[in-house]
Length: 303
Image (cartoon, rainbow, N blue to C red):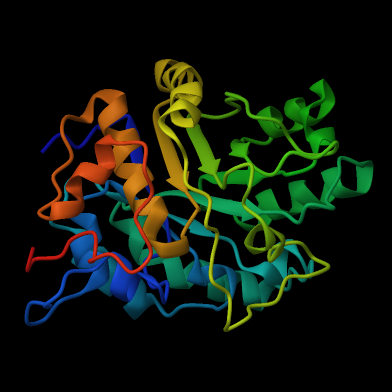
């Protein structure tokens, strides 16, 4: 396998409740593992659980082994909300978080650590200094900042990211007056694209510091990217691919497995060849239709 893949397409998380019936095969093979399964079909997965909890090194080591059969594969991960939202940067917590992901760093399997900032996090001198504190605290990682407020697109803000080697997360998010618009900015050698969709809805607000709770009843982001929406992103991604060392394109529209279909579509649009989906729903990755609710699983082995 080519281990220098420049663009990796994937999804955020792999344990969403709705995916048990919408994505994963039925019947399940003996010893089935969702991560192992998706790593055979996608080239990146954003670890979302690290936003909510500290993980043990043993778990990261297991994840690395489960994805190890794909030589092109790299994880990304979210920084814990304790640091981004609660602004608690005590040395013990920083060390504990870092140690949890260290096995993936050691194996070269972690492409970026995403600092997912709340929508209210605007560019001010205080917030600039805080972002620099995060950079220094997590100096072991290739850092990328998800900055949802448009104030971070001014020259001074972009200059801060360049000076302190913090990547810029290019977003497709709900359109508001203060929302960072779609872009192809590159401030380090790591290019990052996060695609929620313009109609992401309540699921998107979960990560705002005013509403950031993990509701067990959450159904996820049901936006399905049309081919036209993804075509609009192709020139931006190609621009990043031209100048970056690596580019990560992560779909966060997790409801009913829509992100899996869209990531396979994007992979194909970027020249990755036909989608390798062993199911009757493989065709969904080439058509402008979302998976139907109640349809057989995307990778239904019984199909």
